[in-house]
Image (tube, rainbow, N blue to C red):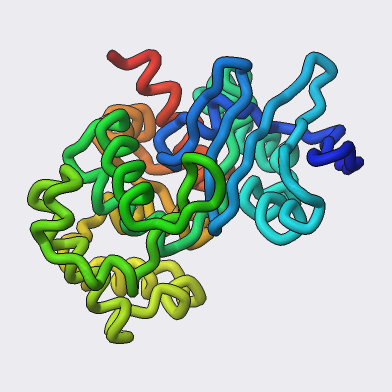
Length: 273
């Protein structure tokens, strides 16, 4: 990766395996919006970003070098060798063809709190509606970052809400889960950063102890917010995919099951209708 600065932007050259549409709009994060010029705008860790890829394949990020180093390099997982990982995963024939068709999917390193709240909201919900609820949550209770963009509200802010306040955002029955999650996080009963440093099985057990968190929500949060790339969430699409693996996941997935899952998830949504 080569980084240069240009006025209010930075330019990244020689970035391997990053497709913005496939990565930002694949159901792992819910705060990215495609703009009329083809770029993507979003927010994470209290920072706003607009990012696009030019005809030469370079990525142009409207951000400072300091914010890139502090937030976006980690967020886009740019220190991980995805080329090598994809090469290993391609030892499996189904994943091999899927990577060839949808090359460039990365697992974003999201904030654990935002990821967990987002996937609690996602239960029995579609992506368009999830995005709408989260946008309303941020616009109503987050802090303004720049024109029209707000931070994701922290646990202390959300703990001051009532269940009715959550329901007014469109969360439905999930409002009572969110209220208790915020309260328990503020009280210290739940410590997400301790969970992040646990072994996978212990972390999963800790998340499953949280009111309103089931196995799918726990696994999605672990993969997308807690950096457990070996976690393999299973939903209705992945249940169909697992029919192709009656003897279990192949050895070549080991350590990167979650990355393989994201490719297979995208393949399933496009090919198993």
